[in-house]
Image 1 (tube, rainbow, N blue to C red):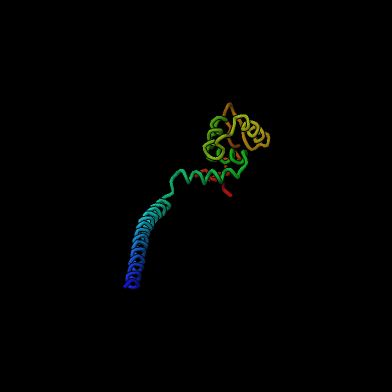
Image 2 (image 1 turned 90 degrees about the vertical axis):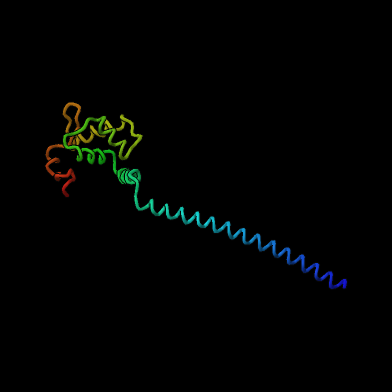
Amino acid sequence: MVNGAVDSSSEFCYKVRMDNFLKDLWERKRSLKRQLEQFNAAERAYRAAAKVVPKRMKTQKKVRKLKKMTIKQSVIQILMAHPHGLTARQILEKLRETSRPELPRHVLSPQLSRLLQEGRLTHKGRVWSLPQSDLLELGGDGDAIV
């Protein structure tokens, strides 16, 4: 009977270890299911948010596009949208809003002067604007006719 008792005792220990192992596996499975549910909920929220692009993100895309332009090109584009012209300070504010948030004032002035010398801008008083000939090439909505 000693052999039978040893066999049943080791068999019992083996079953206990297996039961504990299975309990651990089931607990891990429940934990993973909870994590998967949280992941799926986050993914659904992300996909729903992606359908509605926040205004800030649209602005950031415009900024990236405008940053590819030179300062002079950006000034021309800004003034195309403002046919009555803007002061240097207003142009600087528009540049900072759209493409160059840290542009110092002293960098803009030479660019405006160069555009004036090239005949691409006019300057009356404190207002910078596009020449009348350029304004005539603009469409009714402020976009250039190409």
